[in-house]
Every structure is written in structure tokens, then in C-alpha cells.
Length: 336
Image (cartoon, rainbow, N blue to C red; front, side, top):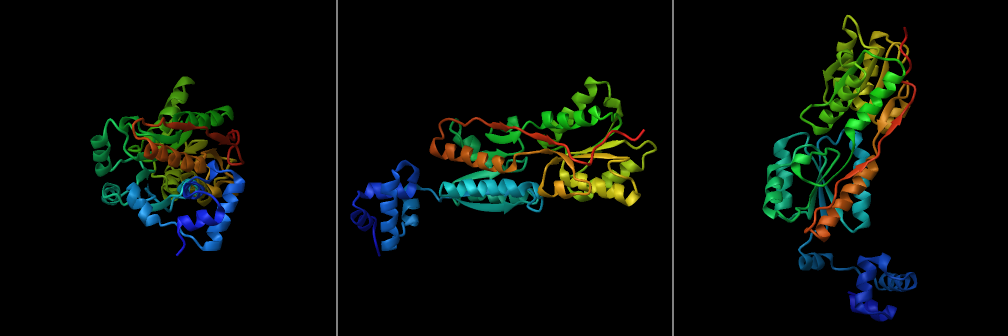
């Protein structure tokens, strides 16, 4: 079996240079890198990653927990995480917690038992085991970061958008078209992002004296809850002329509720979603929505976590990424 010294001898470089080519290729000049990689291929050299990990007390694995893997919102975030991790030589362990606190705790125990180097959680709850690690490591920074659900009370680095401002942009679009009586379908209000979006909507409505015209319904981000909320709004004596849903899946459900009742969208009902999942542009009609930079969120949380793993003496700053209002055909001025 070839060793790193065999590779170095064949390439005419030092063993340290071979190590740099394999661990940090970007810092090595291209001619040298190509010579080393040719020697690696010729000799069939494979680095002993197990021995390396024992020396560094690292697993080269990142643990990612997602509250609902069936939600398409998370798919691009996970792609971003996977791509960024692979570029840095890390594998990803994925846990679908299904909003179950027991599952969240079991996955957090994997971090405690050093089965992974760090934790990225995409929900709003930090498991107690992870919180205990955060407190035990203070004032150093524990290898735990959040994506999407920014909660300043946790004191953890996060990558997210400004949910309050994004929601305000969405309802501003409806107000600009002439809508006043607007249905709001929230996510669970235990979630910080749902509360932030509702706050953004309420403040904007209050500014123009339209807060009393808001009709707030509770959903859970699913299509089914969007259908249910849509039907309840349509059952009102004075239904709203527009609906803003805090996820695209709920907006798809609201469109389905309108279809079942023979209510044309956007003729009688304008509908706005949130996230810009892949299916949003292919709906009938195509869905107006707030686009989140999902892949960039995924890449960003990996960068934060690797910064902590490189130097845990200083917590990296959280990142607020830009959102975009994407106007499509599901919104129009009210039919007076």
C-alpha cells in the first residue's frame, strides 16, 4: 500500500506538500498540485482518514436536523449545506425530527458523544442537550448554529432573512393594488419567524390604519392547513379580497380552497405566499411570493459552523440575507 512518502518521492515534493494538496488544494500552485495528484492516481494512494481523525479528535461530519423533511422549503437549504460541507471535506448526517422533541434530543446526544463535530438545526427549538453544551462551553462558542429561525434569546449564530420586513413587503404589494380586507394565514406562533412575520404585517397595517381589516388565521405551514384556512375565510359573511400565507404550501392550499368553491384567483381573490419553493412558479396561476435565498442560507450556516470549529474563542456574527418580492399572476387589484 502506497504511503504519503511514496507519493512525495514520485512527485518530487515534500510529504508536507502532499498533505497540503490533499487537505488545502487552493493554497498550492497548480503545477505542483497536478504533479502530486498524478502521483496519487498512479500509486493508488488513499489517505488514512481514520488515523487523521483520531489525531485531530474530529469526525469530519456535520449533524443537521430539520423539522420536516417533506417540506420542499428545506430541500434547497439542505443542498446548500451538503455542497458547502463537501467542498470543505465534511460529510453530512441528516436527522428528520418531525417536530418531535424526543427526536431532537436524541440527535443532540450524537453531538455530545462526539459522533459529529457540530450541529446545524433548522427548527426553532434548541434541544436541552445542545443548550447544556452551549452553557458548559461558555464563554467559548459551542459548535451549534441555526438556519432560518433567528432567535436572539438563544444567543447562537444564525443565517436568516429579515422576516418582519419581508412580510411587510408582501402586504405592501397587496395594499398597493388596492386591497384592504386581507386574510393572514400564519405558521405556528411558537416559531420566531411566524411571530416576526405577523409583527411585520401588523405594523404595516397599523401605519395605514388598516389593522382592524386584517383577518388572522392560524396554520402550520402545510398545504392542508392552507386549504382549511382558505375555506374558513371564504365562509365569512365578508370574505377578504386577498390572502397572505406565511408559506407557499399554505398558499397552494388556499388556491385549492378557492378552486373548490369556484372562486377565481386572482379575479375574486389575490393570494401571496412565502419562500418561493420550486412549485410556486408552476401553479395555476403562478404564485406571487417572497423568495428566500435558500441555498445561500444552507451554505452560510456551514461557513458559520466551520468558523467556530476553526476558532471557538470568538462567536461569528449572524448573517441576515436579502429577500425578494416575486410578483406573478396570483395577485391583481380587487374586483369591485
